[in-house]
Amino acid sequence: MSSALARTGRHRQRYENNFRLVSGCIPYRVTEDDEDHSMRSNTHIENKIQVLMVSSPDRDDQVFPKGGWEDDETVLEAACREAFEEAGVKGTLRETPLGVWEFRSKSRQNMCSLEGGCRGYMFALEVTEELDTWPEQQHRDRQWFNVKEAFKVCRYEWMRRALEQLLRVMASDKKDDVIGTVGKAAVVPVDVVVADDQIKNLMTELLGESPPSSSHESTCKLGDSIEPDPGL
Image 1: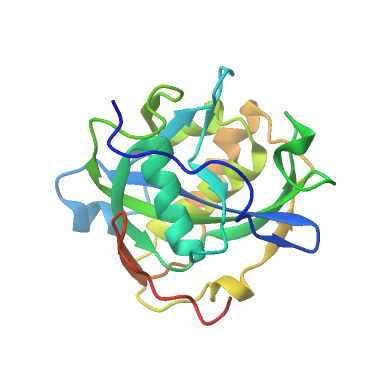
Image 2: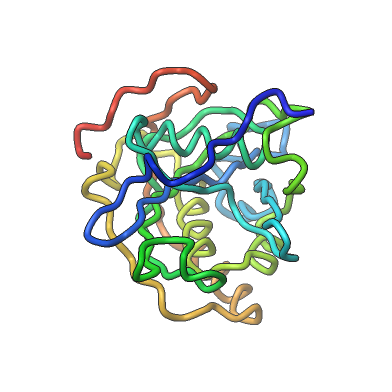
């Protein structure tokens, strides 16, 4: 039995310019005991971070928690709610998004707007609590993956791009916010799927960059009030 019910229906769904607005997160944990050392070293960052993914109902694939951003919540609250409902986790959410991606539903056209377009805000969530029961437990399995595994099993290319950005953020110990507010985050159209044999080269290139990061964080707990971002 789940301790709460997941939200259903579209009566509170936000839309903008014919795009359904979606909010989600990449739940992660640092696996080394010496967290400070692991966060400062870029050499093997992909071996120090695990990400939590969930299965899609009625499909054999893995995705990050996400869902519709509703009109009675902030985009941050929506990301926290989806993490709780789909993956049964709570934690600390970075307030600056990893990015904003525009994509089209490939499984069912009616998943988004009439035109099938979605605009997804993705955030990084450091997991501090895994619940034994959660609302969508009967329909979704959750599983921890290392970064290389996550690239291989992730269903959508735009989610892989969000994972790339998570690595950039995690590989940096800068404290200033250089990505920008939610309202100023870049919107990235998605056209090309990254093939599995490109992942190794992508990781090598990624870990050689000087990455940006954000130190803005909120503790993500169901029912907590999170102040709206002024950029929204």
